[in-house]
Every structure is written in C-alpha cells, then in structure tokens.
Image (tube, rainbow, N blue to C red; front, side, top):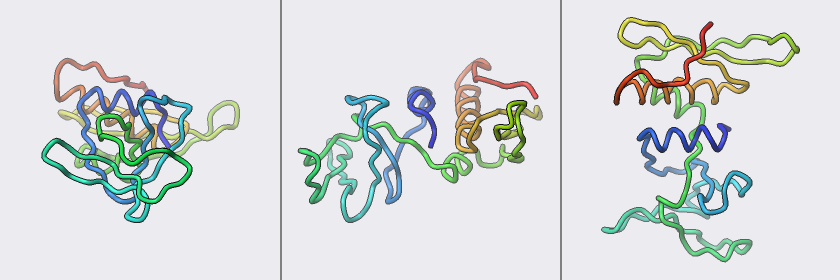
Length: 149
C-alpha cells in the first residue's frame, strides 16, 4: 500500500477518487496512523447525493460512524489502479535488489518521447511516484519527484 504522504500528494495534484468495492482509504482527520478501511458492498458503501459522495458504514460496530464525506477520506490506490491511471505512458516494471539486499522496484514511463524511471520499495510506490510525475507534468512545469536510473 502506498504511503500516506504519497496518497496525499496524488490527491493534492488532482487525482480524483470514484469509490468502488475493494478500494482502500483512511480518514483525513485521524491521519497516517489511522485504520485502513476497505470499500465493500456489505460494510462500507459509497452513496451519491446531490451534495456529494458519502461513504456509508453499514452495520459496523467498532466505529461510531454512520458515514463520512468523500472529501474527509484519503484514497490509497491499489497497484493495479495506479498502473491503469498511467495508461499508455507505462512501459515496464522491474524488480531489483538494492545494496542492502532489500528488493526495490522501478517503473518506467514515457512522456513526450522521454523515458523516466521511478523507484519504490513496493511496486505500488513506484507506480504512485510515476503517476504523481505524470499528473504534475500535465498540469505545469516538470515538478514530479523523478529518480534517475
């Protein structure tokens, strides 16, 4: 799962969430140490109203929550969702071992004919960094967190 900081950066860069079953999120008011929730048709279900989307907590007993507004939740996209958001810019994912024998991952995207790689200790982190770069590049000067390879 991507970090709180990366999820927050994606949100602030303009990546929007349309909740679906299986999506994971945390409550903004609780912060990065809060519980991770999963949208499920049985327990946490998105409800669309004229005023916005509300995540309804159906039958949960451990939380005194009936619902939470979508803007009060921070989406932590899954690896497959991040890859899908990269679309045709995605080139490859590669696993390698760092000097301290810990695995790491590189994701390469191609943007305006230029290949750029992003590193993470988890595939989702590498995809997330690449997506952040892509979104920021599409909205202004090259201000993504690029990692040279």
